[in-house]
Length: 257
Image (cartoon, rainbow, N blue to C red):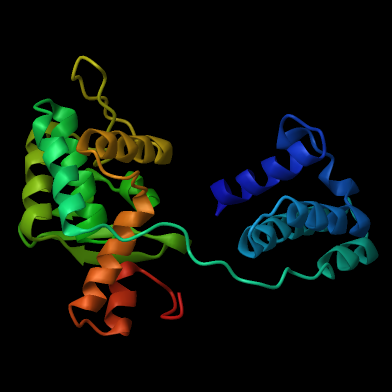
């Protein structure tokens, strides 16, 4: 994704002594530079998946430079020949216990302002429907059909899927819609300290910060957005759902993921 690639390129830019990745003369990259970056990331103890994602981002930049005739075919092919790193790390994060989920929602309920209602709905969808935080922020008010509890979600690769919201998640979302109103625009919006809503899109970082804040209020270990998604998947499998169905509900392109 664009945001992920920017993050990888920003890290490389810092290694090269640049404050911003836009100022790096990427078209001057050669095989020896990319190989050195790969080695440096290994020395820093970065996970193989992180290093390989960085190499992928660099290949994307050099491919663009090649298409723009800013880099020769030989240099481009040599950069492509830099081998990925072997190895695998255990996935980060954890699944939440039912008690932790309840504590998070109780923390939202204790906040009697609109932020508490919104945050309960966000947590409800991330756990109850397994949504990624990028999917949460991309939701539009028109994506939800209360009549049949149907929610249209745009996932990775601009792929759409339908999820069905029920139980406490549906109740929390209904409460939020009553607070938010029917104005067209993003489903989840920022709220200032005075409790005033602004019909504009939340950022990914805002969702992350919200979860950290609610975890602190609930006196549970720090919670990330992916922890809720992992809990959704784990609980489905524990309940006896087959892996193919679980993969489809989570919006994974492959059951191997």
